[in-house]
Image (cartoon, rainbow, N blue to C red; front, top):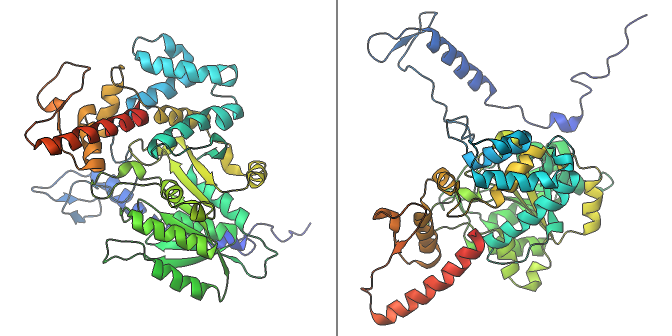
Length: 443
């Protein structure tokens, strides 16, 4: 029998897949790995040079990987508490292990009671769709200063990449006379451009203002919007905050401008906020788009459709291998979400990844066995952490008690009484109000 034409060839591949970019780092990383292997096999010469097998000399003795946003691959230690909880849920016999701290056992025991047959090997859709979203909602309420979060608007996912592809597929309608347009920041994460291509949409680039610290220029977005309407129908505006790879943090004013633009132009706003835990500058604190939207008032807050993303692959957890995240929906019709949940591939996440995310939403409290090691993952003593947050929120500087020494398991701050009495009254009232908010968010 004569061989027929093959079904799957480069010519027959889905054009949307062809639109995804090839990884430009591929050849560079392959060469770096080759040099690393050769250096490992080669004795060093006198001085700083190493000789490769083919006789080539290199003025270094190791390859240092500084290209990737993968902290664990770069040598960062994982957070012990998160791994302990995940390990116990994977192997419940560890509940009886003396090596596991009491609070990790308690957290894992609670989670195991919520898993079908106490097994992380079950599909556990009730745990994913009910239990974890409730704890995520409480976390977001603490983050956003008490703004209400409905757990029904929280959708857990197996990482952010597939979720973005799924959502963009909802926006694309092949019956529209023009293809859907998606506005993308430049510089920006390559996954957005690839997701746009896979969904069959058209990417519309807008450039960030490098001279202005990579600020988002609404005038630039309006300019490209006008140009894009000549060949597509712009429907989605993607914003990355904190920025990737630029590291910038949008100010409240810039965020308000973006939200008002989205309301005026009827754009669905996709907010990539996965690096929110990596903001350390007091003069540029992270604010969620949801919080700023709700504080703008009903004229805007009821008009903008917002989807924001969070991932444990980033931030201080940096657990990329567990593939866990969630997204929150604002002003999205529940009927659309029901339809999405009937086919979206991103909503069937790895259960151990969800366990780890679950533990991250309610970290160990002061006085619990794992609190000290958990805070050492942040690089901060709890009292220093309090002082840092106080400074960022109020401008008041206190000294952490750990500077002077304190009994293990206790935490203090030092405040002098040198300012004027009038100033002290304001300071004490401000600290009291902040402490109440701090307790609500972190206790």
